[in-house]
Image 1 (cartoon, rainbow over the protein chains, first blue to last red):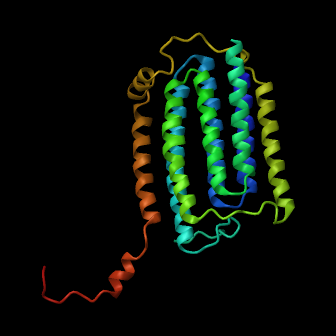
Image 2 (cartoon, rainbow over the protein chains, first blue to last red):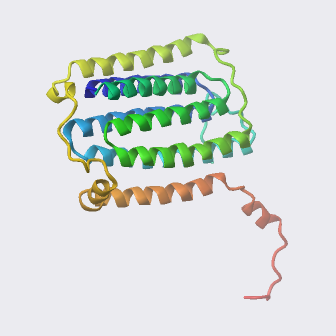
Image 3 (cartoon, chains in turn purple, red):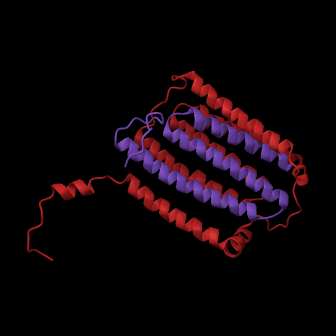
Length: 99
Length: 186
């Protein structure tokens, strides 16, 4: 397959993830859609690494996976904190950040 | 080559369906399961692009560990079903419109790209491309500082998660507890 196919597929996945982030209101699902966007970026990075025959893009993708894992851990910590304080799980209601 | 094409289309359709499932399913638990399927098909695509190590890492770290974390949190907070489209439809339509604009912009960028090699199958590569040995030597030679920065980032995230998710009783307990007797243990 041409590299173009992979890049276009990653554009589609990124757009689906962006649509989810913008339209869903449950913070947990918003995090899942962020994962979709990060993975679409990963797919593009790996496709370009294959295109140049160079391993650097794969290292970038690995670093993106590390960042995604950190984002998940902190995001889920915040969601558990929201649940413990009986705040409604709705990103519209979470308009204030206070410790 | 024809076999590779067939595998690509199956994996691409699976990945798109998984992504659509994450966005469209109402129950967060099913969204998480849909994301697991999406990640599996994405790992197949990574294999087609000769990124063996990343495909394995995707399956083990992402589909394995991170998704288990998600399932635990969904089970903990009891994944309430979110009604789709109950609020103002204008904002929702605006979000979808924005996503379509992003897609159109990305497709225009791909179509109008000056990269000559993007319409090929990629450069000629050695058999060791994407193998753990190549990734390891790149990480420890050329990308040593990003590697160390990533380890610090993981450490900070682990500590931050503990701080965020702990029960905030420590301080109140200290206030309510009887003061220690004066002149006691030093």
